[in-house]
Length: 153
Image (cartoon, rainbow, N blue to C red; front, top):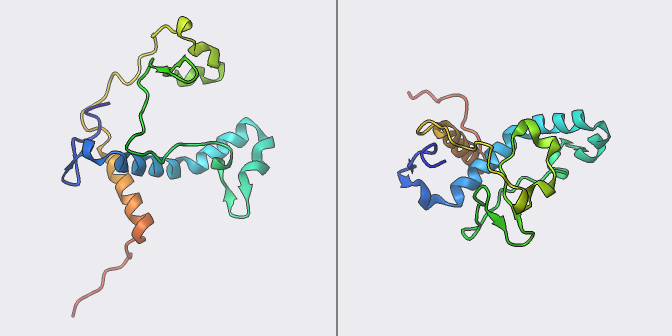
Protein backbone atom coordinates (compact mmCIF):
# COMPACT_ATOMS: atom_id res chain seq x y z
CA UNK A 1 0.00 0.00 0.00
CA UNK A 2 3.04 2.21 -0.21
CA UNK A 3 1.86 5.53 -1.51
CA UNK A 4 -1.70 5.42 -0.19
CA UNK A 5 -0.54 6.69 3.19
CA UNK A 6 1.30 10.01 3.03
CA UNK A 7 5.10 9.77 3.19
CA UNK A 8 5.25 12.52 5.82
CA UNK A 9 2.86 12.78 8.80
CA UNK A 10 3.29 15.44 11.48
CA UNK A 11 6.57 16.51 9.89
CA UNK A 12 8.06 13.02 10.30
CA UNK A 13 8.58 10.20 7.78
CA UNK A 14 5.71 7.76 8.08
CA UNK A 15 7.97 4.70 8.29
CA UNK A 16 9.67 6.20 11.37
CA UNK A 17 6.30 6.22 13.15
CA UNK A 18 5.78 2.46 13.28
CA UNK A 19 4.12 1.04 15.27
CA UNK A 20 2.56 4.16 16.87
CA UNK A 21 0.81 5.46 13.74
CA UNK A 22 -0.50 2.02 12.79
CA UNK A 23 -1.83 1.58 16.33
CA UNK A 24 -3.61 4.94 16.18
CA UNK A 25 -5.22 4.01 12.87
CA UNK A 26 -6.28 0.62 14.25
CA UNK A 27 -7.76 2.19 17.41
CA UNK A 28 -9.68 4.71 15.30
CA UNK A 29 -11.01 2.05 12.92
CA UNK A 30 -11.92 -0.22 15.82
CA UNK A 31 -13.95 2.58 17.44
CA UNK A 32 -15.49 3.61 14.10
CA UNK A 33 -16.85 0.15 13.30
CA UNK A 34 -17.89 -0.81 16.84
CA UNK A 35 -21.66 -0.32 16.53
CA UNK A 36 -21.92 -1.57 12.95
CA UNK A 37 -19.90 -4.67 13.87
CA UNK A 38 -22.21 -5.32 16.83
CA UNK A 39 -25.25 -4.99 14.55
CA UNK A 40 -23.73 -7.38 12.00
CA UNK A 41 -22.86 -9.95 14.67
CA UNK A 42 -26.41 -9.94 16.05
CA UNK A 43 -27.87 -9.96 12.55
CA UNK A 44 -25.71 -12.96 11.67
CA UNK A 45 -26.56 -14.82 14.89
CA UNK A 46 -29.09 -13.30 17.33
CA UNK A 47 -28.03 -15.82 19.99
CA UNK A 48 -24.75 -13.86 20.33
CA UNK A 49 -26.53 -10.72 21.63
CA UNK A 50 -26.08 -11.62 25.34
CA UNK A 51 -22.38 -12.29 24.79
CA UNK A 52 -21.73 -8.83 23.39
CA UNK A 53 -24.09 -6.83 25.63
CA UNK A 54 -23.20 -5.58 29.08
CA UNK A 55 -24.45 -2.78 31.32
CA UNK A 56 -22.71 -0.20 29.11
CA UNK A 57 -24.15 -1.35 25.79
CA UNK A 58 -22.89 -3.57 23.02
CA UNK A 59 -19.24 -4.60 22.87
CA UNK A 60 -18.53 -6.72 19.79
CA UNK A 61 -14.91 -7.00 20.91
CA UNK A 62 -16.04 -9.34 23.69
CA UNK A 63 -16.12 -12.06 21.02
CA UNK A 64 -14.16 -10.61 18.07
CA UNK A 65 -10.51 -9.66 18.33
CA UNK A 66 -9.10 -6.78 16.34
CA UNK A 67 -5.38 -6.69 16.92
CA UNK A 68 -4.21 -3.17 17.64
CA UNK A 69 -1.26 -3.36 19.97
CA UNK A 70 1.87 -4.11 18.01
CA UNK A 71 5.46 -3.74 19.04
CA UNK A 72 8.30 -2.58 16.85
CA UNK A 73 9.20 -6.25 16.33
CA UNK A 74 5.71 -7.16 15.13
CA UNK A 75 5.56 -8.29 11.53
CA UNK A 76 2.71 -7.96 9.13
CA UNK A 77 2.44 -10.95 6.85
CA UNK A 78 2.73 -10.41 3.17
CA UNK A 79 0.01 -12.02 1.08
CA UNK A 80 0.87 -15.62 0.20
CA UNK A 81 3.70 -15.83 2.75
CA UNK A 82 3.87 -18.91 4.97
CA UNK A 83 3.08 -18.98 8.65
CA UNK A 84 5.95 -20.99 10.08
CA UNK A 85 3.89 -22.31 13.01
CA UNK A 86 0.97 -23.80 11.09
CA UNK A 87 2.48 -24.00 7.58
CA UNK A 88 -0.41 -22.24 5.93
CA UNK A 89 -0.34 -19.33 3.53
CA UNK A 90 -1.50 -15.85 4.42
CA UNK A 91 -4.33 -15.36 1.96
CA UNK A 92 -6.13 -12.24 0.88
CA UNK A 93 -9.80 -13.20 0.84
CA UNK A 94 -12.51 -11.84 -1.39
CA UNK A 95 -15.03 -10.34 1.08
CA UNK A 96 -17.89 -11.80 -0.97
CA UNK A 97 -16.46 -15.29 -0.37
CA UNK A 98 -15.51 -15.01 3.31
CA UNK A 99 -18.19 -17.45 4.48
CA UNK A 100 -16.88 -20.13 2.13
CA UNK A 101 -13.31 -19.84 3.45
CA UNK A 102 -11.78 -22.82 5.22
CA UNK A 103 -8.32 -22.89 6.82
CA UNK A 104 -7.61 -25.84 4.54
CA UNK A 105 -7.80 -23.39 1.62
CA UNK A 106 -4.52 -21.95 2.90
CA UNK A 107 -2.55 -25.17 2.56
CA UNK A 108 0.40 -24.24 0.33
CA UNK A 109 -0.30 -26.95 -2.27
CA UNK A 110 -3.84 -25.58 -2.76
CA UNK A 111 -2.98 -21.87 -3.01
CA UNK A 112 -3.43 -20.20 -6.40
CA UNK A 113 -2.86 -16.43 -6.27
CA UNK A 114 -5.84 -15.24 -8.26
CA UNK A 115 -7.43 -12.59 -6.02
CA UNK A 116 -6.16 -9.10 -6.84
CA UNK A 117 -5.19 -7.51 -3.55
CA UNK A 118 -4.34 -3.83 -2.98
CA UNK A 119 -3.26 -3.32 -6.56
CA UNK A 120 -5.07 -0.08 -7.20
CA UNK A 121 -4.87 2.98 -5.03
CA UNK A 122 -4.47 6.70 -5.43
CA UNK A 123 -1.44 8.43 -4.00
CA UNK A 124 -2.21 9.69 -0.48
CA UNK A 125 -5.77 8.32 -0.61
CA UNK A 126 -5.47 7.35 3.08
CA UNK A 127 -4.49 10.86 4.13
CA UNK A 128 -7.94 11.62 5.58
CA UNK A 129 -7.90 8.29 7.44
CA UNK A 130 -4.57 9.23 9.03
CA UNK A 131 -5.90 12.68 9.96
CA UNK A 132 -9.02 11.23 11.57
CA UNK A 133 -6.98 8.64 13.46
CA UNK A 134 -4.68 11.33 14.83
CA UNK A 135 -7.67 13.49 15.83
CA UNK A 136 -9.32 10.50 17.52
CA UNK A 137 -6.09 9.75 19.40
CA UNK A 138 -5.72 13.37 20.54
CA UNK A 139 -9.33 13.50 21.77
CA UNK A 140 -8.89 10.17 23.59
CA UNK A 141 -5.78 11.53 25.32
CA UNK A 142 -6.70 15.16 25.94
CA UNK A 143 -10.46 15.41 25.55
CA UNK A 144 -12.54 17.15 22.94
CA UNK A 145 -11.90 20.82 22.27
CA UNK A 146 -14.46 23.17 23.73
CA UNK A 147 -17.27 24.03 21.35
CA UNK A 148 -17.31 27.74 22.06
CA UNK A 149 -14.59 30.27 21.72
CA UNK A 150 -13.99 32.85 24.33
CA UNK A 151 -14.34 36.44 23.32
CA UNK A 152 -11.56 38.75 24.23
CA UNK A 153 -12.28 42.01 25.65
